[in-house]
Length: 344
View 1: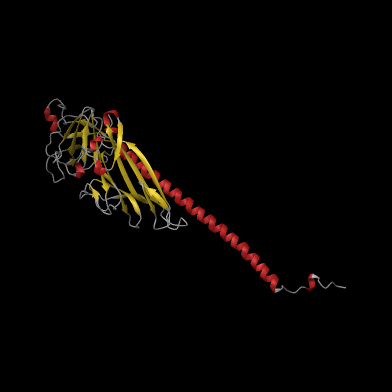
View 2: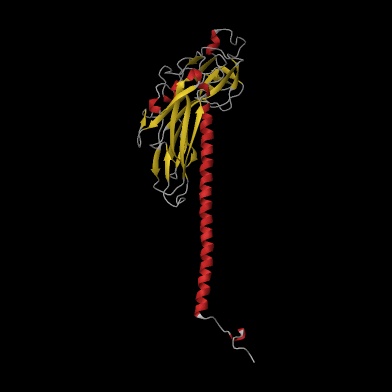
């Protein structure tokens, strides 16, 4: 005799059993989905944090290297005998004011800076400071002759002669360069480059040379290095993301790293003869740029993706508390760099 409740007699599920099974399945699926969403959000936050930290590391590595070497003009240093043969050397334009190793412009509004920006700087985003660094940009090449005959450095005629150098790699006509040894240096513009470095007056270059006389002879114990004025500022890239840009001389700006929302800079001034900073001031309060012996750089970085945080993030940057209008992740970073060539 067969039992009434034998499995062989069961031909389906009751509605209650089906509903219970569906609910249990939905609970399991919901748990799996919740775990996935939580892990995905954690991954996005971790990735955004890592990207921000990496961008900050790269930006500071580049900026600190440039700032640290500001004002480096070769072995002679900034406080030895110096001859500037460029036109307008007494009142040089912004791109050629090599007597200022460092310079800055304080953001005082949405699109204004103090001092006012020179025409050479275009495209900077309002609200962020602008930093200018001047000095050599390449390792030097040896000066092997001046002039090309046996009278090298035996009389003042050598001062106006072309320079023979060990290599022309990285050099071009129109470059601003400094020739120097450990006791003196001369700034001039290359007007022609073959196996010799020519530094004539005229030639259609800007600013051009006011004289051929370099004021010294560098054959056998001198080096030649390129000089540049490099500007750092924040500007939106073609994708609309704020980025740190670098502009060298009159060339077009080049993007260095994205996600840099703001840059604020203060300058350490004080007793430079004892290498003692007594105060950090903004660019509009610096009275003499040659008195600056350190630079404090603060960067505010944002994630490239939105909707990283669960709500608009509140943060403090440059002493100001702000609540973001979006849900990007933001972090602030600060470093201080000494200007080696302004220290005694």
